[in-house]
Length: 177
Image (cartoon, rainbow, N blue to C red):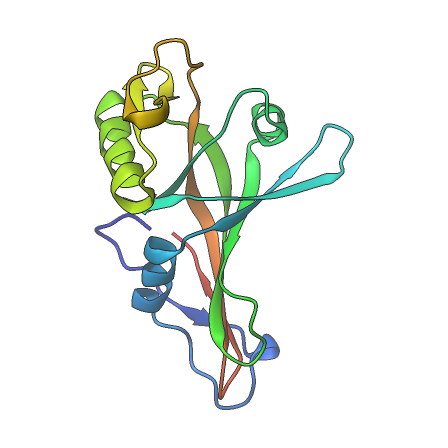
């Protein structure tokens, strides 16, 4: 699901209402690109789930997010990188929810991190400095903060994407790379 490929939608008729059609990739891509928040699901060492909201950026067929090393989600991902990110809305009768399943991998490529930092600032007014390990927070007033810890940036390249459309017809569509 890179920027140069368009995955084929596969409608799951068993989980869709009669007369439904597969959700087009362009609609799913727009939801991933424009979402303000995602829910990240990881697994703790004892098997319990951990779910938390966070902003993420869809770029180049990868969904990126930032966390601190001391946070539960980072500790979980170091041990078990498989995760799910979900976005959509909380309306029952209309909307499009999207889940992205994959493995979270650290992003340490400086050129990619520079692009992602600009995206965070442009999209969320959340400025980061880039270093060789990830991002660093700015201090108040957007000044660099050399004392801030480096924050890892993770990217999830989808193994599977599911789209759940609601409206006149309910439809579940699957996309695989």
